[in-house]
Length: 345
Ligand SMILES: Nc1ncnc2c1ncn2[C@@H]1O[C@H](COP(=O)(O)OP(=O)(O)O)[C@@H](O)[C@H]1O
Ligand SMILES: [Mg+2]
Image (cartoon, rainbow, N blue to C red; front, side, top):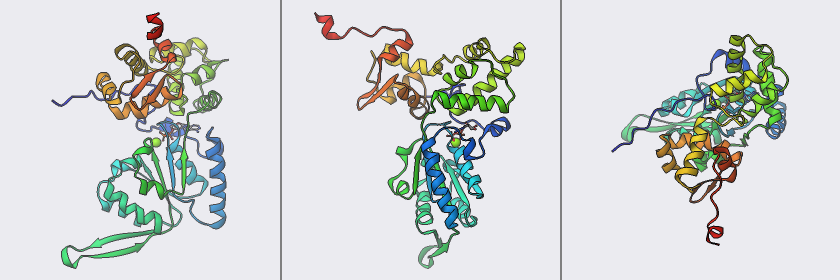
């Protein structure tokens, strides 16, 4: 029997992308200087971009990876702007036939950036076309069929390929090896999140009272996309309640309505932790079992929910599966089981 999974409902604190709307666009940093955090990456990029500009060469193929909502797409656009390059945007699942990628490549002009989001979902025959394009700047195409078929090699304009993925482990080794720069985006610190929240509140003209930015930052899962969404939600509550600047009670009311706790955990996070603690005595439990019980996609659990729970120390990943930590027990309000040894005494 096929297990029918319910369609994933997008929750407020879910950092996975929805369609980017106009407001979201205005919140996107345009230049590296406005791009908060990721200091190491910015430092490296500054050098590589300056060197490339000096040599009048493209930046070099770049892979950006990390959990959703941390700024991969934003960074790809920032790079294009800083390099004064034209950017062509597509995604792995959007490319179906070899011809799709061939026409993208042959239309690139000198110095252009080709950005492929969700690059781990590129189909293997399409990925193979990229190998030659990335390594030698050529495109091999087959003309004709059967015994008269012949291969023609086209020279491409020098370009930079930027790939983004939430699942770097799913990228094949030959593709990964062809990237010159590989940057892993990490979660943002509380201070960085506060800057992001303050920046968004300035752009959207939502004055924040003392401590409100900090509360919002702490509830943002260390993820800029979530911070932006919270500011937008808080703006609505503040407007309807006629409160300005936004105070603690408005922030708390917003978070309560959205079922987000003060540490940024939402209803699904709580279900994940509660299931491991209550149904599996703290684990270990395998991802597929957990996904089936929670009626969530495995990929969603692994790419969207787990990274933050792991980073915050609620979960641990072991070869046998996921384990709930003492912090998880505390979060769900259940006391740790008495260790077997002491129970025997
Ligand atoms: N470093 C940053 N500084 C400020 N805002 C950011 C930063 N990174 C991301 N954002 C904001 O978060 C939103 C989501 O980022 P995005 O680049 O779409 O994430 P990803 O592609 O990694 O899923 C952006 O629209 C942007 O407004
Ligand atoms: Mg993106």
